[in-house]
Length: 249
Ligand code: PEP
Image 1 (tube, rainbow, N blue to C red):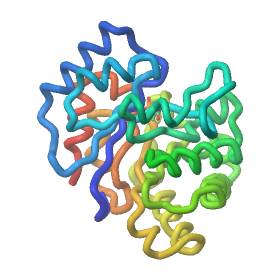
Image 2: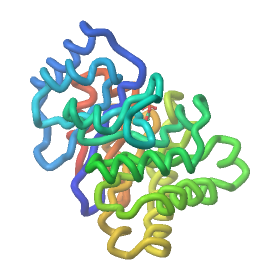
Image 3: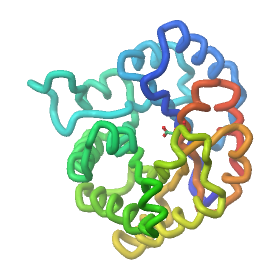
Image 4: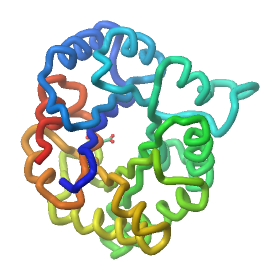
């Protein structure tokens, strides 16, 4: 882990019922968590209120998406103002499922990031390459282009956590090796230094996501530029998520 406070997010994606979420919340409430770690969970929109009202304040709430601006006549969307009203402090943006399954592009994602930040909501800004892009030697190009889209849109990096999530590692059980992750994290930090500022590069937390679990987190957490994790599948199991949170070194 680097010098910034370790940050672990749990992305519950489109999973859960009132009952299963109530069990997960009670497991998280009774888990012992390292104090020096920021912990965030992102429930599906419809359960945010339930989670906010039952989960310990030790864990903050993120949304999995938001609209690009103020609410209004946008059927099916959820505004940042509404998320704030429910107590959300963070929003996950640019997740690979939204980019590659739903079809969101860099500009659309950048617009959401800028709006969320303008309303005081922190952004977990996801980036990451497809397998074919990695195999074509384009990993850095793809990640830097996604970083540039955020940089072009946002006025400040104060409230942004970058999540490097190689698409080939998400939900596949194929975790990046600690060396593969570290190589991209340091390259992204270097990109921030050259294109934003040295201060932002050293302060911004860059977390890794993609098949992180209770068994592989400790090795990844040892790497100097891995400042935490964004966890999908393993965040649905309270005790395993706690192990990942406590892997801070
Ligand atoms: C994610 O959805 O951000 C993720 C990393 O998923 P998983 O941990 O299941 O690969």
